[in-house]
Amino acid sequence: MAYRFYMPQLSLMGQGCLKEMGEEISARGFKKALIVTDKILCDIKLVDKLTKVLENNSIEYVIYNETKPNPTVKNVHDGLELLKESQCDFVISFGGGSPHDCAKGIAILATNGGDIKDYEGVNKSKLPQLPLICVNTTAGTASEMTIFCIITDEDRHVKMALVDKNMTPICAVNDPELMTAMPKGLTAATGMDALTHAVEAYVSTAATPVTDACAMKAIQLISVNLKNAVDNGNDITARDNMAYAEYLAGMAFNNASLGYVHAIAHQLGGFYDLPHGVCNAVLLPRVQQFNSKVCAARLKDVAMFMGVDVANLNDEQGAQAAIDAIMELSKSINIPSGLKELGVKESDFDILAENALKDACGLTNPIKATHDEVKDILKASM
Image (tube, rainbow, N blue to C red; front, side):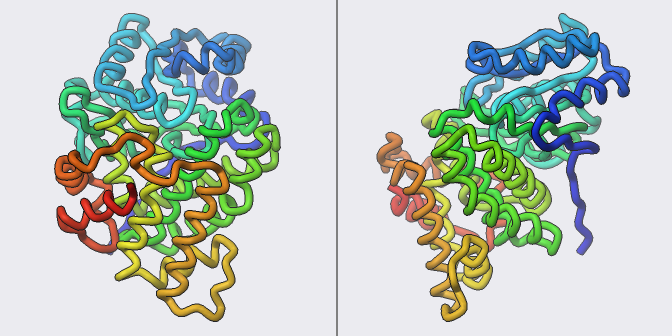
């Protein structure tokens, strides 16, 4: 079977790398940027670090800062309108997964036209998006380098998964200096999102030796550095290592895809407007418990990557050790223990399960679930 491997043309990484971005933009001949971000990043003046780089390189810009934590269809279309009015020739997203996903939606519509709902699914666009540069301020989603885009349809209360090769950013920027401002809760949630990416990619039916290598190193780095990043946000070494970890996890799932953790989490986020990383963290051990029926050996590897001594464990015991290690890490960084704390109701399980089974992320889960089995996973996660 032939495989394809997607990632940006260029990735700038390491402390202080944001400053190099201006030279790259100038060299490509871009003139005016639509900056897609959110109000919080503007209020705390973090966006100023980006605009200073642009100004120092004589690059014009306008700012769209209305992106919601779960970006909506309206966000995409409002941002597109501003892009057209301002005659921008490229897009810069600044933030975490929310601005990146919103920017992808704007950029793909700028060249392909139509409604963002037209692109739900896999490779629905015909043309590459308007050039997009993603500047990351979190260490979790990896949206700055992937072909994945998640947009909430407010009418249906569902998160649409758009998986499209034409949404690949041309440049990803991961400067850990931008990540020290992240509060503890966001650091924890995004870190567990990155761990979920790596684990789901490792047990995916589309995994390859290349994605395995990326997932393995990501899990190792997260296991060692996430708690330090949460407990001491100014630990630049931990922040840097988490930036590499989330990028590696992105390389893994961008090409091996994901599984039922994301398929279910998307529904929780769309239905209740819940934080994606927290939903993933709660669901991850429960979904892997379900998956362990067919991929116990792979999960035993995950336990080993997380530092567990598995030498004397069989595959089933190793899989349980991985699940225990994931739950222990979540607990140590104060992730909620269950979905009940997040306001999820059992009366909604039927519609959540129905929509989860339609989500493209579930296609590569190692075992196919029935409607009732998805409901069982939700119940176990309460």
